[in-house]
Length: 110
Image (cartoon, rainbow, N blue to C red; front, side, top):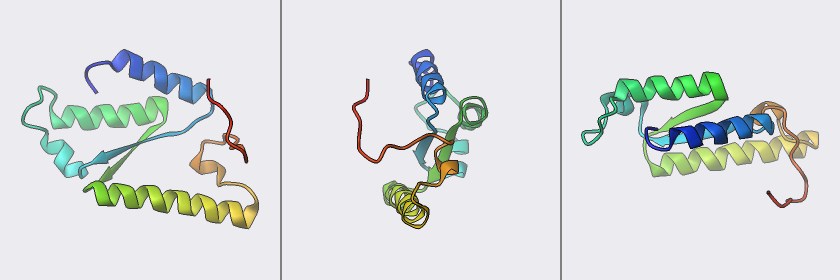
């Protein structure tokens, strides 16, 4: 969030231009993030504000999970829901992916 921000911003813009939706899983509760991290010069409040600004400007949605297990459960449940939508409707839920087209067969990335 502090070092390498210009590069991260360029990557978010490239993803947005490609029609991709990004999600950032934070392994802490929102309250914990507000509380900050003792070894950082970046305050917790500044971090939360930056995360929410990134969501508004670049579509990088933050998801706050209490621990690694909850993060894993979020990922599994999200892809399970995508699979159910695909099975029921023959395509994934577009709102989960910002309207992007998802190939049936994996393709190589540039």
